[in-house]
Length: 53
Image (tube, rainbow, N blue to C red):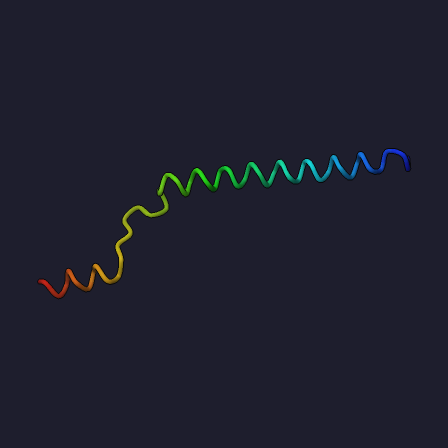
């Protein structure tokens, strides 16, 4: 059991790294697609539009 402990620890670290890497890749794709910015207008732009009316 003691001889395999290092391999078990390295395996757990590898699995955690893969999970975090997959999550970061998904978040990066969402950021690149800019779906989260749909319909966003800057506050300064809104004030200028209202002032012009």
